[in-house]
Picture 1: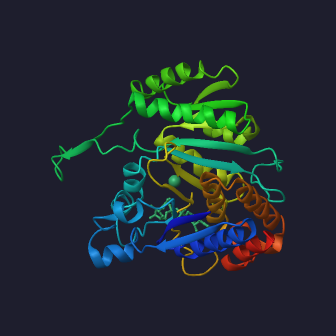
Picture 2 (picture 1 turned 180 degrees about the vertical axis):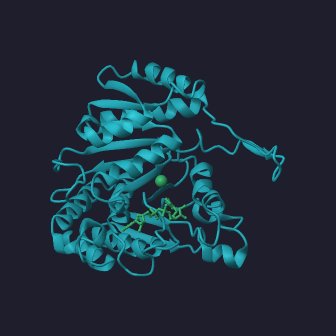
Picture 3 (picture 1 turned 60 degrees about the vertical axis):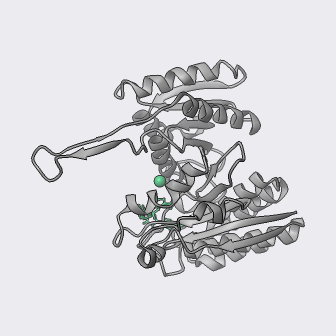
Length: 354
Ligand code: NAI
Ligand code: MG
């Protein structure tokens, strides 16, 4: 078995954590008897933008569309280029053009890692956020009028389509079944957002009828944030719109000690296009270049990618290796109170695969 990966490190700590992800993939490949072939791309970065005046080449779809998956670091350098330009010109474009409509973000408190939530231990926090990834609040429908005048006027619409809402809900219920999880929770705000969110609720209720074996509930996003802090053990699978899912998936991992360990799969479940695997965190300009970033988010993303490629055994082994390394305080990076550098932590996971 040979897998061809498009590797895009991007900006900042993306360039530091992607090599650790690849190191672990190589170790898993040796151990489990498959091969990884990589093509590295320098686009989706500020450097590329500085020399080409755009974030990605015009033919980016041809260049990476034939790979089995995209292994992505992080993009964004807000001092030099506005975030909406860098993100929409790269990551958001890939998610949309490759119709990666399910953004899957597992949240788990690892053994031995202290949660900032009092009294929480391994096993108490273990859920998956399923974020809609192609429409919703992150739409390009809107505009600005009378710019720079007192009458300045800005509108941005939320877009919800029947296809778009139904497919993300179906994905969440199917994931719950596949992973043996009991409940799907919907993130809503239909008390305030009075047109799109009641529609979201309606489609959620409708989809739930097809899954009588799965419990359901629904919370407004504000109280849902409180519940994630106060009773995280309640949650199994959370299905959320693009914006709500984005917010919840920084809050959730923060409750497990750091956002530095959280992974994301941007998945096209129909497999017409490559799916994209990345950490949840961004390019972290504040710590970039120091070699201290936590590589676990990138490595866990590699494990999700292996699962997607059909290498379940290797994927499970990588997760187990992550757990073993994190339970050893001397192998943790500084965001988890340790002193290990990025490479030491990454190498430890690779070594733990045996
Ligand atoms: P960020 O996730 O880059 O950083 C937030 C905080 O968490 C920082 O203090 C950072 O040092 C820390 N942190 C993040 N990852 C870490 C890791 N692996 N190990 C240790 N500490 C870590 O978010 P921020 O600062 O809001 O955004 C920075 C840039 O990244 C912006 O341009 C933003 O648009 C972009 N971004 C890109 C994403 C992507 O490529 N998927 C996702 C989120 C932000
Ligand atoms: Mg985010």
